Image (cartoon, rainbow, N blue to C red; front, side):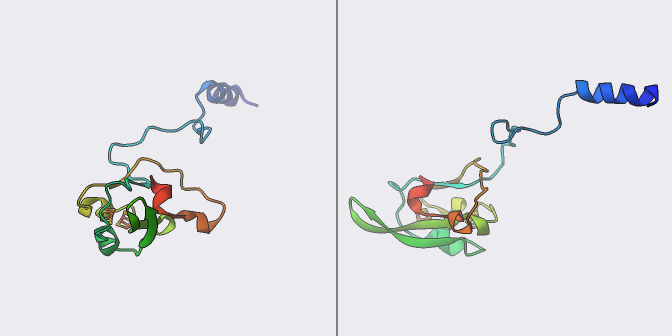
Length: 120
Ligand code: SF4
Ligand code: SF4
């Protein structure tokens, strides 16, 4: 092997790896990164504004058994989400927000459907 190639190999070995050991290691996210939703079930007023504004039929209003009886709250199918943030923008009490959680890998497609309790 020519000397030049050996130098290149030695240089590459000394460099920091370009890949990360996900999920233990993670790159920092940008300030405007949009990930999986978070819902505060205590302040949701069941207005369904998030459901109506969603451009990709990602949200379904489902029954939730609360201390005050059955309430309708948003269920999110993350697989369909465009992360456009419209649902967060229209939510009157600001109880539905997009977080920086990007752990969207699932082994079963049904696990993409997150009930209100899963979004807390
Ligand atoms: S971020 Fe956009 S696509 Fe996703 S649930 Fe909200 S409105 Fe729908
Ligand atoms: S999450 Fe917000 S917009 Fe959606 S039903 Fe609850 S209060 Fe209304």
